[in-house]
Length: 315
Image 1 (tube, rainbow, N blue to C red):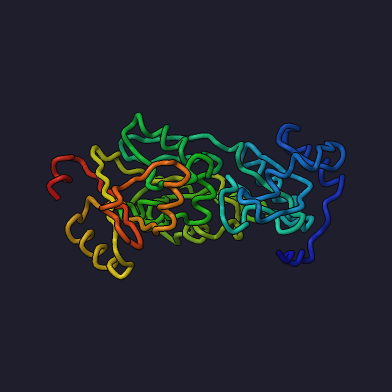
Image 2: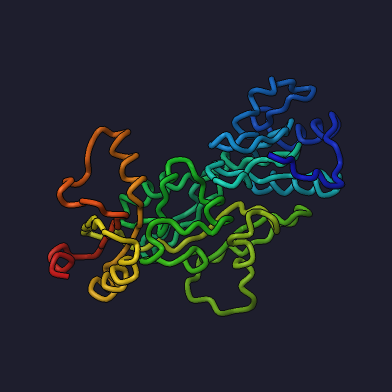
């Protein structure tokens, strides 16, 4: 794979490392340069994406614990013209969470605190390094859910979810993060902290600046905290798998699902025959009776969720 052009950026020096050591605790710095001299292999987890497809050559990983520390790091990088790549759970599939060359890696895993949750409004304020599944577990006793569900929920972080505008499995029910996110705390490239961490759901005042950062992948600033409106947890869920003889039937099936399931439709997911066979092969189990699927080209998983199981079953 061709290497991306490095750009006209400064080269990291020992003086830079010493400067960062004055900002962060020693346990928050991982570097193959003096005075830390960690083996370069210890940085592989951060330099390589989880598919092993993209490989960076960073010699420095910084793991701040506070927004103030992020601000101080970015201010120095801005003044020195050091390239930096923000990193969350590193679960992406396109290599955007790892260096293209030797950029400084700013990993947000240490910023994993839930700052507040209001059970009346369902609004949670969480730091960017919170793992999505941990947030779901935090909300469960309060009978609320995060309006986002992903296959990588056990390792992806909410800051990365917001920065990539992750859609997830239930975007049909709860919409995109552009609607669920109420506010953001962002550190701009020059180190300035932009506090737009609103917890007001109906706010029509001024410019909605947070929308610029949702899906911007850290190019405009690094998200350090998020406020999200969380819906009540559904009391009933139903799942149905349909085997379709042809892809051509998909539009009509989707239309019927929306028409007849209406407000309880929460997910409509497609998977092809090859994916089905791979799952069966690796699990050693057949999900459906062979007589039922025949020569089907694809499958649809339909999920409903609502407040009363009897109503959902009637629908």
